[in-house]
Image 1 (cartoon, helix red, strand yellow):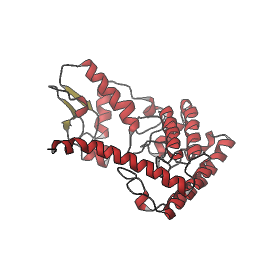
Image 2 (cartoon, one colour):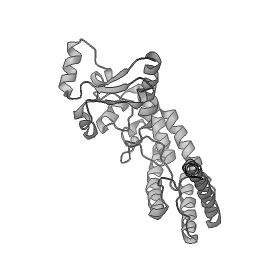
Image 3 (cartoon, helix red, strand yellow):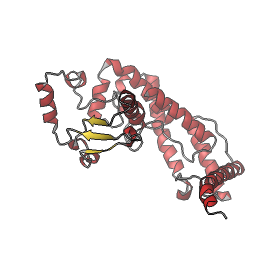
Image 4 (cartoon, helix red, strand yellow):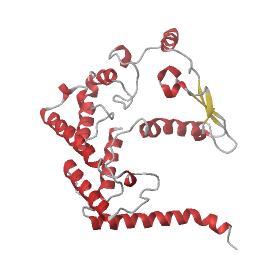
Length: 281
């Protein structure tokens, strides 16, 4: 997962460099964009199930429980699952223990004479996931950091926080979970990154709302004054992060927007063409 986050950051820097996005984009997964789960868990499981049962209906059984979160409290007991459905074959998800309490879960594990994961028994975690998860509580992050096997990845993730100026959990820096594990140099980099993060947010806050990302971005061409502002914002953000960028003056910003708008127009025409043709005489 760390490699994926590093690659995402490198890609996002490239996107910012050539003005393919208006604001710098963070490297991390988020609760709203959990590509970590979809890419490294769900898609892997679904692919394996379809290969194992190519001609059969598939029931994907999960351990989701209503008490785990507000979102999960609203989930159905079962539902169709498009990722496992094929022509003539149906896939469904069955949340078999959705009504269970956590005590019922541990009672069932004990009754089956199964051994709990060491994350629970040795490190005191309340849940088992990736060592450092975007959904983890502070206590669980600290539990993960107390395991020596996780120290190297902890420092590598903190280094990405420092390089990107984006904290791991939106309002929580992973660097603050176990600062005693950081070298003086890395701790100093984090301190600079926190200052730069606040400055970056303030600078990007100058961008008018109608120029921010939305579906089909860009949808409007900036005025000359807005292009000057965007060039200024980009130059200041790039200086904070330490990256080289293009489109650092009004003329180049407007030229890039013209290029993107023309590309979007061509894409829209391609999408609409079949509908137009169907009404042609």
